[in-house]
Amino acid sequence: MPDQEIIADIRQFNRFYTAQLGLLQQHIFDSEYSLTEVRVLYEIHFNKQTTATGIREALHIDAGYLSRILRKLEKAGMVLKHPLPEDGRSSYLTLSDRGRRLMVKMGTLSDDQIRDMLSHLPPNDHQTIAASMRELRRLLGAPGSGITMEQVEIRSDIRPGDIGDIIALHGQLYAKEYGYDHRFEHYVMETIHDYMVHADPRRDRLWLATSLGRLVGVVAIQHREGRQAQLRWFLIRPEYRGIGLGKALMQQAMDFCRAQRFRKIYLLTTDQQSAAAALYKKWGFVKKESTPASLWGHDLYEERYELEL
Image (tube, rainbow, N blue to C red; front, side):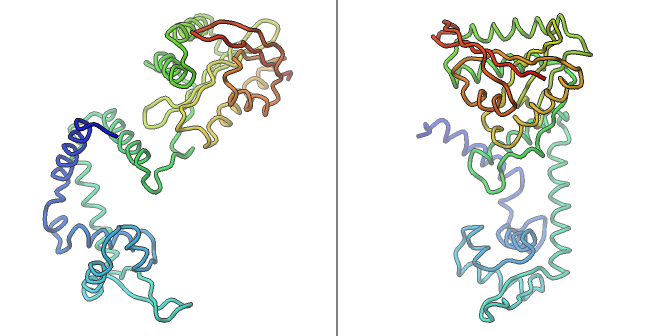
């Protein structure tokens, strides 16, 4: 259960944001409609055609209260009722032309309000606010808040801060998921330093997956002697797994290796990374070695996988 300090912080934010958006005003944007009435109009507008039951379930409002709102909106010429073909006693709802014009106006006013709210902030802070709000919706299970590949950008240009983000992401996730201590983060730092010192733009490549300014996935190919390549630092944030990001990153890496005509790709991992190993096997990697070791506070097996091209 959350402690009282967390509850107080959330309530304080709610009070601030309610006042910021003017939600305590009797009418929204100086219109004749209340927040609830506009939300009902929005549900009809968003769903194109819906029923009173659908609106009640979406907004969790009393049936009698909703009925009064719908009567008001219908009388004002905002909402139209249409008999359901399969049940003439029931109706579905759509907006009239007047209702649609109001929704367009409300949308424009709402956009302008948010632009004004953010106008004094630099663009990076815009991204931070948007990412935080999206994450809040996801954590609270809001409808339509699931993460998709459309929200992810994959790039291979290295920008200031990227290297530190890669090291931090590995240190944090491996500590959380496997209990690795700080020595693992130091190991990652050393391997990335080696990559940066010896990187050849023609034979080495680093792919970073970002979403709203945050690193959410990474993979790299580092050339080795004898036309070999090593696949390194393949990692995805837990909440971005299962959406096809791992496949997309591996595809980039494999396409690059084939374009560079590498003879063999290998990777080093441990027996604890079973989910990643399953993905490697799908791409044709075969486990060649398994050696007991004591690393990062654990007794484990170091494993080597290889793929002949």
